[in-house]
Length: 437
Ligand code: BGC
Image (cartoon, rainbow, N blue to C red):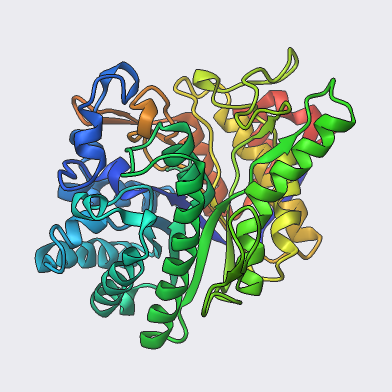
């Protein structure tokens, strides 16, 4: 009998999350495919290749997700599969997505579907993708086709994943496939077009399915001044945090662009979200006048594989508080840790879910938690070097092994709770912190 148990609401969504390019395999019409072949683009020259083989057999992992007791999954659609050439829609690809979604529902797993998650059709890049206003009509047309084919199966949509991260990686850092024009100014122009795309998709979905919920997946990165920082550092971190975390959301509320993204109104943008999809991973220290965060978290910090970030559960509560200020239901659409040896993940799950439980106890409307990720997958520019899965994958042999954290998540999902007994068995180091006495 556990000494203490944190119970979650009976209708809570216990989920996992993936993105098309990272799991499907052989997305040859995506801009990532040629990009991955360029020397130096991906760590150690790795490729997405067959990825997790989901295009052929997502069902095998969906079986594992169902066994784990999850009742929700967030996945994305690969635009380049659905529309491999401009205005040529591939019916077989749409049918395959339909089959995957039906497979989820048959297993008791509610789908959440993302329309754009970091990858573009090659033809769209040639036309200038988000750097040109043309993209808005293309995105509307793609959305309309997808919704006509799949809309009856999807209660909840995410239009665009992490627009600020996407803009930064692609236009500023250059670690994602290059756009036709790089640089901060082009990036800001792209942001404006992404907002227009979001608004177009929101209303396109609502026209066909007024009861569907539509939102965005917004990464909240806790940007803080370095511990030794004074007034200038605090002001810089605050400003950058506003730009990265708040600017986009405030535009979605008011329908107006805010500087530095520009000025003016974006038609039909105001109020165009039904929930806040929150992606949270870590906190960063920013040192004036740099845009890129420090890569040193200090001696006491617990840092995950590949120096990806600090394990900082309290930040999830802070991020939920920030999301709550928008007054909409909140879904944790991503949260996870790269940890091949699974030495951190069990404790990570327990301590982060404790913050979710605390938020729910404060009556913040957190409706679900989608762990990133179900199975190790292709981690963008970092290739296969970072392993986020509850299930370990050998991409060569496609062999899978359930990690201890996967067993723990299974117990959590099946019981809709986190207990001191689970902590004692899976992550005893967190016991004194979470369940003192
Ligand atoms: C992205 C995922 C990615 C994860 C871990 C998020 O920013 O949405 O695609 O795999 O972070 O790095």
